[in-house]
Structures are given as structure tokens and as C-alpha cells.
Image 1 (tube, rainbow, N blue to C red):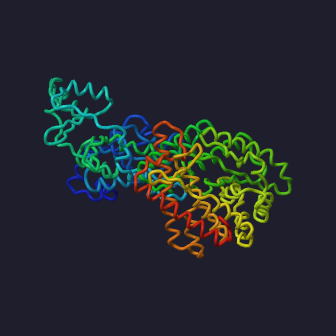
Image 2: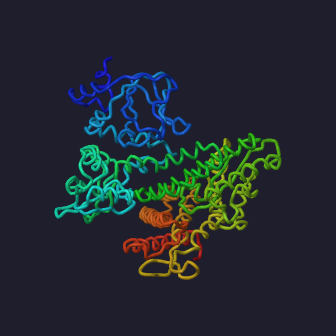
Image 3: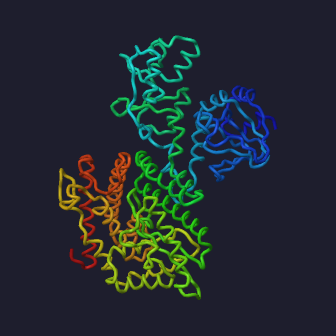
Length: 611
């Protein structure tokens, strides 16, 4: 098959006009790569061609891990070629491969076409999004990030009378690649590329004023424009810098093509991949320490706060699994089947930047005694708990960790504990019950969840236990003090602040747990529990909507507060200053607390509890 007939079969060439396709063929050459040959090196020299696989296959490698394989008709090299950055992946011939190499100028022309723009958006997104255990990738897609989130500093400007020499000195001093220049009719822009192409390349004097070489008027985008659209505009206009304006039309910063194409380095998918491929505990911990910045990027991109809590849990799950694997490598194969359990907020996949460890370990010793196999699992649990702590996830202050023998045991021991807690709930406080009854298997071949689920389904037959759970859900009221229309803590070290977790989020979590357990549901995520409660008539749809909206609002407040702290170099906490909230948010909180109190009153009445 000739080159044009082949290219016509695949995007982005399939919709090109004949003349443009003929031009592509004239600027294409063929190269053979034997199996094992590196075609592009990760973080190496930028790609100078757009590569199309004609025969064979190539593989994309992140560090030592193969993350994708491309076959006939698939394209690579374009992100590096367009951004001028080193390739994000090493590209290596998986088998003998024949590739068409299209030169950069021609490839850029293709990408400016409508088929090219559509292809670019789709292909970059596909490279970015690899499954993250049930999270809808569309919700954490970096290419749907509002461009506002990439602004890190105000724009740097200069008068039009500045000389090229003065402009270059200012750019160097400020470490920027462009300057905004104000004229009576609006803003223009001059870039480092302008200095090279319009001054140095033409042999003009460095004393030329920048008013003679700037681009005017500067093309701008609204701060709410998503990244994918900005990339498309840059390609269409052939520019590498675009000023960003706010709702009032004021320029708040400048984004570059490098900012946009490098966005992939901030995604939760790469964080998860870095943890999973860590060769040792230190590397795994160091990778996990990047979670804070990743979460901040998601918050600033206006990702749903419930999904962000899921992302945090997925990252911690990945770290836990990797530490377990490395522990087994260190201590040898386990003596029997086992399962590592997440408890509490991690089991619910509802974690923020301030979280602690709640975990347990179960095993099935078979005919052996539990004490005979427990020493191995004690070492393994200590190994994991220690390194999770090093990654910034402290141990539960109540001791709910697998290294504690009370939270480690055989399946029979766990069944006994659960049944005892249900038949004699006075033995353990509500906090313990709340943590333990939110469980999820994270690693290991043992199916312990099935046995625990069967016990949970018997809960509706244990009225004393349901009253115990219910009492824990209604005994703590939302904060009752007021400061400028915001509900706050009235006294103590937290006076004047709102503990958004314990004063709101936890209260809804506790209500949802009672609804689920009293119906025999084994679902553990709060929003899902609320929705299931409606199906069996435990709460009205209006109550469900109110609690879910309140839950989401408080999570948003919590994550935005913690993001401001992390960006400011402070340790995150849950104590929100009401003065940092707008009047609508404060009013929303008041309504949320009223909704929680109404739901608590209804539950107390149903269970015959006094408040």
C-alpha cells in the first residue's frame, strides 16, 4: 500500500484534503527500527518528527514500566515536538518496526486543521488517563482544567519605549518568557521568540524599542476556558503565549505552551504509577509525598470534592499495596492466606490532606493456631505502618492499626469481634464501632469481606446495637456559636473557628452509617449509603438531597482550606476561619447544620433516643 493510501486510513490524516495530504507525503521519510531500539528517550532531546507506525509495534515506557503499546497507524512524538519538551516516555521498538517520519513544520500544519485539533485532544487525553479503580477519568481529566488554575504569578509588563536590551534583561531577571506592553488601545505582548526572530535573526540593533516588534493586540482567553481549548487556540493561531483575563477583563497572568503540555506531570494517574513502580520503600514514600500538590491541583481545577477524596484514598491504597509487596519481599512469603483491610475514612474512600491510618489485618491459619502465624503478620504490619507514617499518614491515636494485636487476627477472631460488638456494644465506644464497621479489603488473597458482610446483614435483628450506633450519630450536635453568620466553635483552643470535619462531615457520615447498617446494607461510601436509605424508606428524598448537598459543601470548604494551607507552606488542618468564607458559603453552612439537626432529631425519635 502506498503512503497516501495508508495514511488516509488513520487519524489525523483521514479527513485531510488531497493537496494537504500530498504535501504531507512530500515531507515524509521512512525509517526502520529493529526490536529493542530506543526511538525517543524519556526527558531527552525533544522529538523533531511526528512518527506514524507503518508495521510492527512500539512501546511507551515510564522509567522501567511499559505503560502503553502502539501498533499500525498509531502516532507518537507529537506532544514533545509541539511543546519543545523532552519526551514524557521512552519510545522503544517492541518488535521490528517501520515508521513514517513527518517533519515538524508539516506536522504542525496538520495539527492546526480541525481533524488535527480533534486528534490532538483525544490522543493526549488517552495517554493521560489510565484506570484509577472506579474513578470516572472525565472528572479528573487534566485537559478539562480551567486555565485559571495554571496561573502562578501576576503578569510582568514593560512600557513600549523599552529597548530590546532592557526587555531581555527584565525577562531574565523575572524568569519569564514574555512581557505585556500596554498601549492606549489595549495590551500587546512581546516574547523571547520575538526577540530572537525579529531582532537577532534579522541583525537589528538591541536598542530597537519593543513597541516596534510586539504583537498587537494580544489574543486573550477567559480564565474559565479549559486547557484543551487553549491548546487548540495556540495551535490555530501559531502562538506560544496567551494572556488570561478574569471576569472583569483584567489580565491575571500569562500561560505558555510549556505550561499546558507539562500539565500531565501533575495528574493523579502519574502519582499512582510512580508509587506502584517504586523499587524500594524510600522511593515509594518519596513518591507519595507528592500527593499534596496533586490534590491542590485538583482542587484548583474545580474537580468534584467527593472525587478528590477518592483520589487521595486510591493513592494511599497504592502506597499500602506497594509497601505490603516490599515487606513480603523482605520477610518472605506469608505462611497462609491473608487480607489487609482499610477501615474508617479510607475504607469509605473519603480522605483529605489531613488523615491518619485506620487499618487491620486478617488471616486464615487453617489448622494451625493463630498465634503460630501471627508473628509474621506482626512484622509485616509494623513494616507498613512505619512507612505510611513516614509518608505523612500518622498512626491512629486510638491505636486502630494492624500493628496492634487487637486489630490483627484470624477470620474466626474477626467474626467473633464483630458479633461481640453487635451483641454487646457497650464493650467498645461508638468511635471504634464507627471505624470498624467501615471496612474494605486493600490487598491479599483472603476474602474476609464476605464473612463480615454476612454479619452486617444480621444487624437489623440487633436493636441494642442499632441504638448504640444511633446514639453515636445523634449525641454530637453541630456547632452552635455564631460569628458573622457562620457557625463556629464557641470555646476551647478552637474558639472562633469551624471544625468542618467533626462539626459537620463526620455527623453526616455517622447518620449514613446508621441508615445503611440498620437496613443490612454493606455499602460503605457515605453518598451511596444516603441514596440506598431512600430506596428502603429510611429517609425522604428531600432529606437525602439536603444531606448530600451539605456533605459536598463541607468537603469543598475543607479541601479549599487545606489547599490554601499547603500552598502557604503550612500543615493542613480542619479548622476553618469563617472570615475566609464568602457570605453565600456561610449561609449555606447554616442551612447544612440545620439539615443535620433535623436528620438527627428524626433518627433519635425513630430509635427512641433522647438528645
